[in-house]
Image (cartoon, rainbow over all chains, first blue to last red; front, top):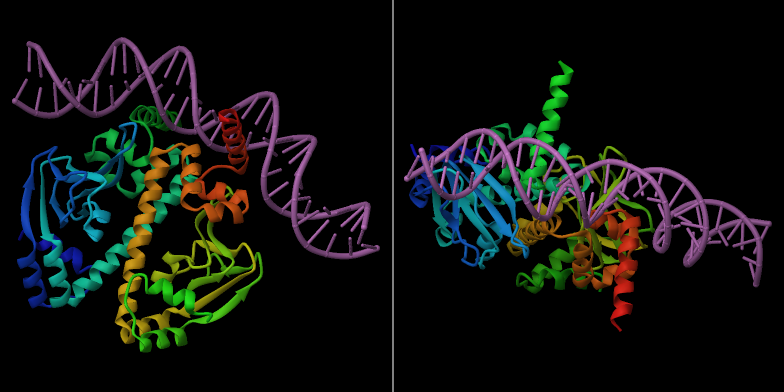
Length: 198
Length: 198
DNA sequence: CGTCTATTTGAATGTACTCAAAAGCGGTGG
DNA sequence: CCACCGCTTTTGAGTACATTCAAATAGACG
């Protein structure tokens, strides 16, 4: 039911027995957030592993000039949180906020530690998850270093067509590392180019 | 002797017994590279975990315009390689190259898998290493998104004063995501500002 | 319907890049 | 030991990509 998306997401990477599934279900509890609510506040410790089952959320950082920069964004089926804060159980540099009305499954750091012991496959899963997250960050650094804003936007659209439609443009701009104004101009330029082609 | 730096680097994060140390020593074998030699070639699989005991090396990516972009740089006491290629044992997108005459300790993927079983503390160590690497990438993304080239350069100098002195400027520029010409201009501007202050 | 926020548009500006050329530096061979 | 070669760094002029600021327009929500 509620946990199906979570379990199938885990089982993409590791094989679980029915007992494992049952235990994982017992560890993760549902929670709802209204649009705009905070899943994690800057300065607080991110105490939970959080998996989105409905809606969407962003993790962002506020720099010294007060500008927001989105590190991570996610919709249902994705993990969200301040990973850095969670891993080291230290105060978060980032805020995590719901973009739509959002439902998550969450489990505390302590419960996850225990889960690792009882379901070693989950331990393995978590490691794989970190590795993928690491690789995703590396790709993002490479893109930021080597591609223009236009190319990054096109790559984003290609990779996450669903997000493009659901998230406000300003968040996509922030994720890409450009201003919302410039993204708007980029989009117009691309549209003009498209219409000329016909 | 040769393995001391490696062991003390591991023991910063986990506690080892003498038997553990002995086994780790047996797994890692030394290897030397001349300045300019490749530790890993693009397209080949990065088969080894590599730890620098002397010298320095960079991991870089070549984009479609033929420009190099440095993802990672390291001197003695640092791990180096194409982590993505190593983790998934897939062909590397990157080259890894010695900047000075360099000596490393290396262990194959298979040997490391066995090491995980025999020395569980090494398993734990490796996980911690990935977590730190992940966090470092996140910081780098944040810096690229929120800071000017000048601020990034100053942050780099503050964080890695040793590297600043030993590596050619063009590699530092590439790591920071700017052209060598522009870094040269930045340095002059900073010098002029310093001299005025006196 | 009115308010609040998000998006679009335009003009002026700034940061960083490209290209080209000169200067510096290190290694190598005569 | 010096001269030369190749590579790195510096410098300058012109340019491009992206930002800032301000204002208008469009959408979303109560």
